[in-house]
Image (tube, rainbow, N blue to C red; front, side):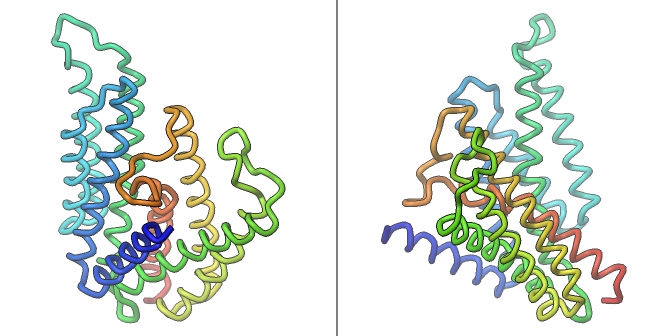
Length: 274
């Protein structure tokens, strides 16, 4: 338990420092997180006989992230397409022109899933630091995002422990309950409304919708990783974080939530008079 608390405090301090230090520091933290998370997931897949060109995919993931620094979302999409093509053709001809690839569709589908799940979604978290408006900085957007994530997790945990009795998806994640989900919704929506009102200086109802979307995505992200680990027969992605498992075990719900937050913040910035 002390190790788990220490790791949690350390990660929190790192995030706070990166937000304070500016956009480039935040990008660096996200880039390191993406590399570690991809290494964890791809290593687990390789252990179960999936063909995963780990180095290539990690490099492509970094390219997706860093091209968004100067080019934003259009650059991200362009490099994502290049990454998909590289994966498709690289796997197709891995055994040469005269030998057909084995399990091509399986490995291709999983490779695309990893590229989408980790570097694509994580890049939206990085790009939050670049959303500058007359009334709110990129740092404010990141803080709003992190507060909503923490509130959703806290609400889900408290309500689940105190009232949880109706499993949400017992075949996928037996411990996740509808009561916990309702707790996540209440905490997430309330925090979203307050964050958008106080940090981004916009209507609270917009923040409530953002919080609701974030909770849905975070919950689905948790369920997706639970099923992923269930199919591989593993408990954690790795043991890199004492008391927490792998880094990906902490990022599962946060990654898709980042996309929702980025879309919401850009909507506010571009269409609602920021």
